[in-house]
Length: 562
Ligand code: FAD
Image (cartoon, rainbow, N blue to C red; front, side, top):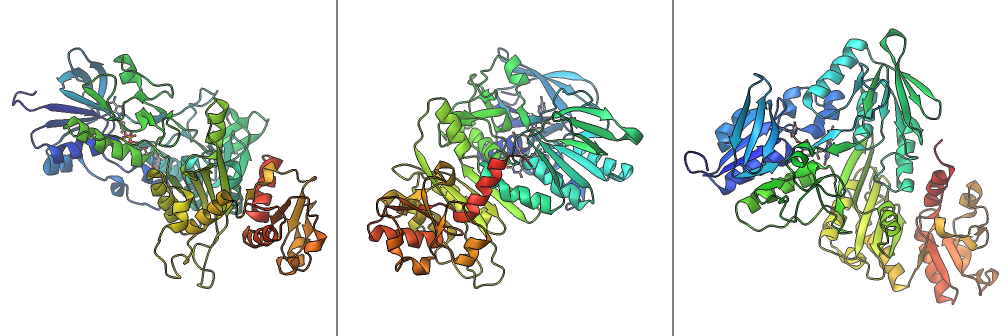
């Protein structure tokens, strides 16, 4: 309690998780003495907007400031101390030691409740030359300001981005918008590691179409000073990319230094361990945001996912629990979205990659998947754009495990709907039946979400089983291409025989009755009709999910980095 008998809540970190926690605390208690300690010069700023400030989409830095210390004081009676870094926690005395960075003063403050919301810091690999001027990470407003100044003052023409995840891709787009020629060096054979490889293929094509050079499956080995202040980025494969600036975007690491030194429990994923109420191993200390590891909503295992939504929700829930309400954090679904030029990519739940990793550790997750390529609204209404949706579901019950989508407009709403379905433990049978708003501009009477559910439900019921390219013996199987002959001639799976759908009834005799027929068309719709037709004529048939379009993406993943 402070001198006035008010409970003292100290919060370390004043952006997403910390600021949400502070303001929710105030809404629940007028009497608490709430203090935010923030190391940087700003609180509650829009770190998600930083790439767009670099790209000049957001041109005024002030627009990145969601709230100021003055607003916190006036509106919420919260004491915000920027440029005040918490240096240590003395749990036995319930005290923290703080350094006022502007004056150099060190002082101590007592707390009744402490909230850790220190976030995560960008990973800076210990490579030779990594400290050279012109090599940046992006986390704060001053970081983005420095990058902007460097671009202008140096007349940057070429940039290398190390890492092809969310921040790397957003930076690529924004640098291209500023006229910079961009190369992305990514250690994995694909961009956007959260996606399954075949779902990243359209994104990679789109980046290349927008002038970005991709160096996939290659890792940076060193940075050397080149002529005239340029930076030579050398890679393990022996490539050398000359550039005027470098952005390191290879991920973030939870800031756990304070917690570890204070003896708080750290989890197996390297984040601060919290229970479902977001309480740490010390009953007086709570932790939220990028620094913590929480339960994966689907697998139940511990994960650390640096996303703004969970950080904000956790801040709010921690405040509820601090004030005596018992609210459980349900876990993280990893729902995320990113726009890259005109393409949107989004995902929720777990990917096949995550399932395979879990299976490698002995966890059993029986699953199947479907892939479809619907328009974002009906094709007869102008400007319908295609998207690719991959839906992953448990077998045999059909519980939805995850979804990924890539396309243009409407990707966000499909993934959001499926995200909510996952949170309610819904099944593909629920997606079949879900009622979504429809007019021609917005979707279809059978929305892509319904269609995804219908394809999966048809498979689970055995009406139209699905097969997958990577699981097929492409030489030994009877593969039936039901597209028109012109489409077949323009490109087909080598061993496939062609009987267009419209001729199939009359030509059934050409198919051996003792062999399973694997049907495909362009996207999977005509082959679904063919599968139903064949099965009703007593021929074992299944539909190869996603059709020729998925075949091409899958083949591209097989060829490896170009
Ligand atoms: P932060 O918001 O990082 O806040 C932690 C604060 O704690 C920092 O300001 C830090 O200075 C302060 N701090 C740390 N240690 C101390 C200390 N000892 N004393 C005092 N203060 C301390 N997420 C999305 O969901 N969507 C996006 O589009 C998106 N885009 C992003 C773009 C960029 C460039 C970045 C960097 C992140 C982006 N994120 C995005 C991630 C999102 O910003 C984070 O997940 C979220 O901010 C985490 O909130 P947090 O409160 O845990 O940490």
